[in-house]
Amino acid sequence: MDATQLLLGVLFSSIGLGFFIYGRRQQAAVPLVCGIALMLFPYFVSNAWAMVLVGAALMAIPYFVRL
Image (tube, rainbow, N blue to C red):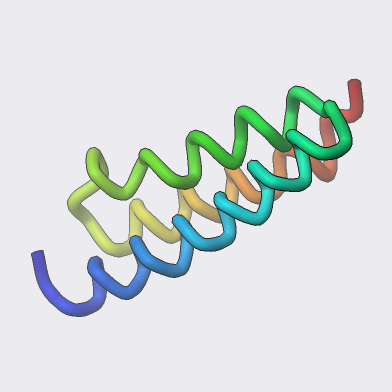
């Protein structure tokens, strides 16, 4: 793990924490699940570009999916 992956992991995990708190307070399932996924996926993705793509996709899901 290099510095880029570490910083991207911290960035996406902190954004995921924000989604998680928002989803829990608003009782909205989509931001809650995306927040958990954003906090966990950096542990499983080892490529920096893949991490950016997956993170961007997970951040865009609550914008497009409204339940």
